[in-house]
Image 1 (tube, helix red, strand yellow):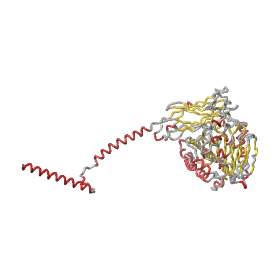
Image 2 (cartoon, one colour; image 1 turned 180 degrees about the vertical axis):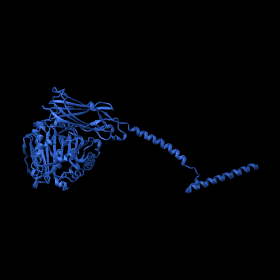
Image 3 (tube, one colour; image 1 turned 135 degrees about the vertical axis):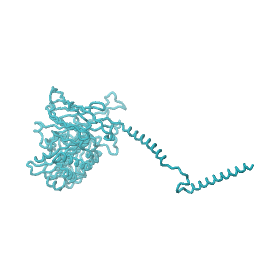
Image 4 (cartoon, one colour; image 1 turned 90 degrees about the vertical axis):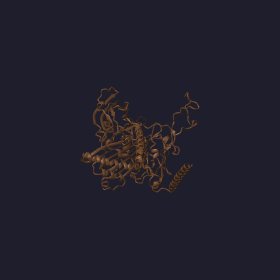
Length: 605
């Protein structure tokens, strides 16, 4: 397998004295796609880590792990969907891949479950501030304790395994963006200023068809356990569309090419001056690191291991696909390390600060690289209709000629109330309809507003068969304060995690490190519609009630409090008001005198 060879290539040369290493793998994929896998490793001896003597291991993360007594950590930021049918098996066998959004699991040392939960809460809040993410929202309702899905990757003492608590949480609604990439780069020794990390550009990275960032911290010891290091591995995998990535930044909107620049298939009956069926491409497009990532590599990282710098960048392509290495005035030739693998080193020594670029010319189509066939295809969807009930259906297809054993895990929110008696597992294909695929079940029911539902199933799928798993659930009604601002969009349900268990053939053909990491894949997340009230009605009621209360209370208060007095009796009256009062008095006296004289004259007559 290709990725088995890649893992051996990356890790067989690991010496525990090497403190920092970095790797970049470029692999052209069908339909003009490119897989770019970045890998960074920083090591710290256990003694220096306990003494807080950090050199290449980031202090900010190391102190969080020490304070929370976290012995092993796995953090994932993911976007998009891996197309296994077009791109083959997942990078790193899915061991460095997470579900959509943010996924976190860790082994925390604690004497009791209550203490482990408290340390887990401290860990999520600290990582939330470190990576500018919403990890602080991973509360008890989003936390589970997996039983069969995950195994420790590190070398833990046997006497300490009894006090290690595995906790897992996810945020499928989290939007991964540049705010998460910046703290990720700050954990690297060269901070994205030199080495292969200088290729990272948020505009390119988060415009990829599929992208995942992973951070894994684990203890690694030699065979006899005499020397141990704390290894932090940072991985970035992305699938880029070459034509889309080559679009200039000042023209981000994709526009169709002019009709005169398109080669049309004139054999089509609908071909005309305004209708065109483009001809299939007969050449592979030209591209370079500058075109795809928007920048070149800014020389080698001076802190990387000098003894392991000869294979920093590897290209996995057929030998017919040629490329040119551009690094100053020096001419470099890639080393052939495998039939479909060529590697080269970044400039060092006097040329250490020179920019580095790979240029692939436009050439006729060559046979594509043999894609590794995935061992399992998984699809999951929502069934049912209405606002009260629904269902989940997962289809797992085994394309191989040998049976596959796996662990299927789901973490459901508390407002999804599944019925375990409706769980149905059916196998179809290859005459295995009556095959008992369900071997073991672990079910922990939800408690309203306290914890979610935890389901783990041990399954076996016969060769060349399809397994369909389904169950029904009820939808709970939330309080109006529990709805998010975009409640009409729906509620995200975390992807299912599938772990493929190794068989005898896998154990014989894979390395111990690869077997320890395991083979994983995730389904897509789901969108659950819940009964949503009309939030405009409370607003209308509040406005109408407030208006009536304001009018009624204001009128009554005005009548009770207001006192009517003459203008001249008001203290602090103005001069104009006093003059007006004097005028009114004078006018009233004149009228009285006139009336008196008028009445006397009439009497005399």
